[in-house]
Length: 123
Image (tube, rainbow, N blue to C red):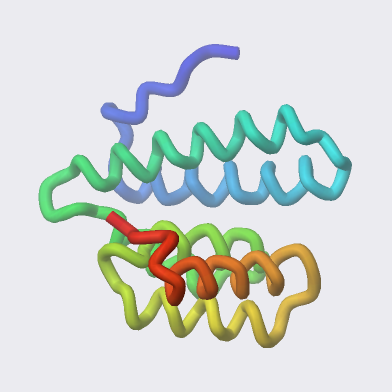
């Protein structure tokens, strides 16, 4: 597979890439393909880092994904925006925890717990 040049992508393209990776992760998880899921997560983190490095920290562009129909996309967007929009991200995680079945609901709950315990400190 050809590497993707994230630096040459616009913010909108990076948000689309992030979305596609989240959806791929969701499908890989359903099929029990752990290696594929982990690869997609690493790629998602690379997109996050590229957005973070852009002037003004463009991770805020991921806020647009809070309305996405897929819970995994919303979960990952909320997690990745905790440092730049903590109140909105926490509210989204609380909604996911309260309304989504496993794995997204419990994953959102675990994220909130690690935040509250001081284990996870968004940066």
